[in-house]
Length: 502
Image (cartoon, rainbow, N blue to C red):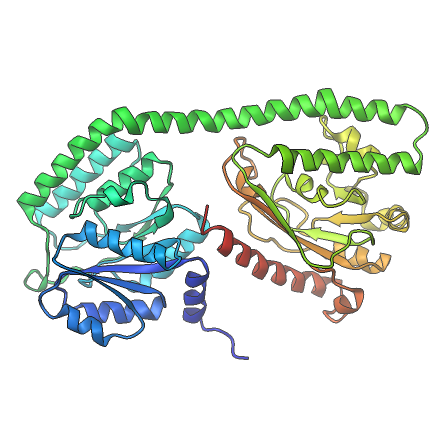
């Protein structure tokens, strides 16, 4: 089977992430065919909104295959055309829309940059920031951009260097009041402001732009009329910024810290004053038998289920999926990508018969270190060879061993390099490897971050991989490399599905 080219992979990835391109056009008969043709080379899902063209644009669009054309008559303005395009995109099941103009000033080749920004900042509104160095522009156009940037900062408290660009990626499910957006040129500014007020992250990325010679330009900007409309809109938005936008911003800021401190206080009270004393009393009340230790593991599972499923972490929605036929009755070496301190809690919900290999910080943790040590979790600092006798004893008693192949938490949630230790342990113990894949804990509590953010959390349990299948991959180092590639593919698929609704 032939490998995908870079362009084919980009097109597939755009489709998988629910991203289409919306091109509003009005009387661009000289450029629209070229713009659409180049766009189709970058993205296979293209919607063109013909906003009442009278110069033959409609006939040109009929001759272009592979695009969805939305006709709107008579001409009502760019804002109306964008709204029609977004509504059509939503009907077709898309979550994001990249907008570019039909006059040829935007390079469709930049679509890949918007895709990468979307992958890094899912749910954000990506704003193309034009490189205007050396570009011949009218004084009115330059002033309008500076004017708009200034008032945008006043209205939102955020600075963007280019609020007038039409090259953007919109999270169309999150645009507030889409049906109320104004119909003309100023609609793009209005959407920026409303999205900012409602907590949509705004991310600028650099883009190149082409301005043809003055005699070849097709502009529908009406300097006096449109500038008056923008001024009126800015006046209204400044008033709304005080009575509506500012309270939303303050409320969102306060809720982030309320969510964080509530969770921290809940965790401290639960761990220091309920769970740890309870476990201490349980451990100290009589001899620690095998039956008693198993009951301790059941208690830990119940606590994890209570926190993750019944109680829930504020600002998150927890879900999971277990592949059909997977049983936790048999011991495995469980592997999982590592994102956050929350990972262990996510994995504990499935079975009490699991023991984790941890780092020294977790093993000596003042909040739950006592519980960790008495649950027979072991620090990896002791070395795999030294731990093998204890691990074999655990497997013989029916416990699975959970190991993070990356060895440390990922800073950006991307899958890091897999070490061979987990596969070496599985080989020496003669057990299958059970893959789990996590999404979200690293977005809720990123590494070196001290506030809880909002994100769904999802964990998926795949089918076990037998020793025979592992041996077919090569030695332990090769197994680690191949399993990492498998994780990268699966994690990307999970991201593509979940991040259409974040």
